[in-house]
Image (tube, rainbow, N blue to C red; front, side, top):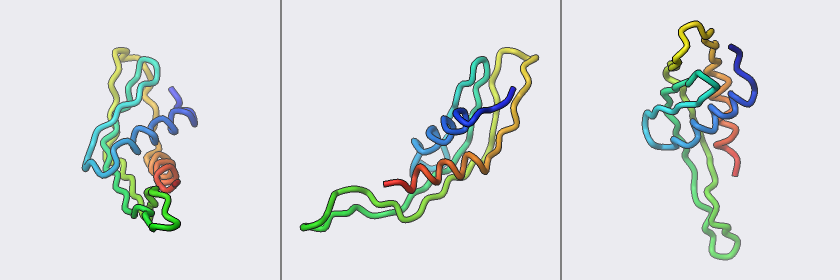
Length: 100
């Protein structure tokens, strides 16, 4: 089984939902396979709250996404397990987190 660009995007989105929650586990399903990631995601920044020109938006100044572990869960023992590129997930999550 091979992971697509959309699969990596889904995994990165799942990681971004764990911002500043400490070490977390997220699961992304791909057919009969669940890819379970253990991640640590941190974002620092500030809230733009200037009285005259402030928007109230959170402005990220630093972000880190670490994929600590990858596990698989499947009912089909004959299913080929994909190789997960941890650095690709971390880069995609970083790009998502630094948008404002």
